[in-house]
Length: 253
Length: 253
Image (cartoon, rainbow over all chains, first blue to last red):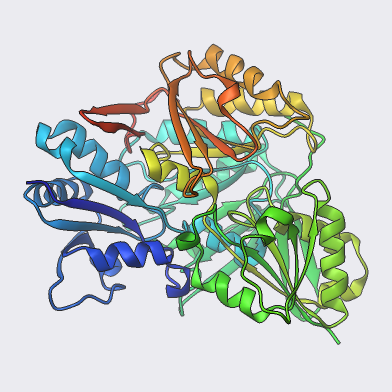
């Protein structure tokens, strides 16, 4: 017997940004795996069971979820934001590929969600209005040298950059180094947006120039968006400024 | 008197992927501006009025919406997917910056939505599971040489690529040229996903290798995702294959 495995994104934090599709999947599952703070955002019934784990145990959580689904249960793996963006979908598929053949027979459904950079961008304007990229600044899973090369390549090519996992207790210095690299490539006036907990009651959005950008403004719940050389700020009297990246460019490449 | 201007993303097409926040904004507005097929997806009340326009008239539509909101109306500009990703939010801000001072006083709210690449990715696995970028292949607003340079830069840096606006009647050859460029940089076995109308009744998802990738599979409603050299395919008996990009990399940069 083979059960069901949902991998669901519940969005960045505002309950009104969780899709009906995600809520339907949650209603249809009985065992929930995820990082505790994400599971805390669900309203579960008495017949629904939660298995919380630390956010550094993604692969073990993925294996547990696959094992439970393969034994016939209806299982839901919960991610904040979108499960396919630096979250659980890739971890589950890594575990599935390396696991027993029975795991490949599990009925798998991935339910997308609003990822943080879209919610942060909407709060300040349209900073992702032209070509952009999303890069995780965590060097737990890739060498720091790769991250540095990618930052130089994308900034040099004119893409706006959204940084996920910008900082943590175990990685306090990476974001400052990233800003230093980007100052070599981009104008120091380039807008930098620190979007913390977008859409949640404790939301904090800060806009600084790349020259002033202070890594201490970011924490684990922050998505940092760094404009391109063409990203603009519109000042408004008595209202927060708007940041946008024009749809058109004349170059440079 | 100054009205309200919502810029709302209604997601890629499945109504269950439209957020409650977007539905609330739609319920709160009286005049709707957008590309006809997006407005057709709304269920409006008799007191709500629609102003449809062609998808090549984004800046004129943005000006009309700002003018109407500044005159005191409650206005909604509708985008498919997310309004901040190759859609109306940047067009409205361009118009706002260049327009009369009164437009800056308009109460503006941007409501994010699920963008196509997330919906397509979820249908096949987790192809955006590590660093990735989104590039519009339209050379209406930027020189083709810039697009070519960006493709080489991001593929060389190891990012997965989501291509928006891959093809149209006026631009039939660009996607084939893009594949040719990427074949110079990436292994020919790299997975390419053509995600057409994800989540809609006429959805069509096709997975090919970069060697086989055929531009004719794409149309205007398609988001094309090209893996990195590390993107993998998991075959399953009697089920569609899964595509994912592992979270970790050893390089190259």
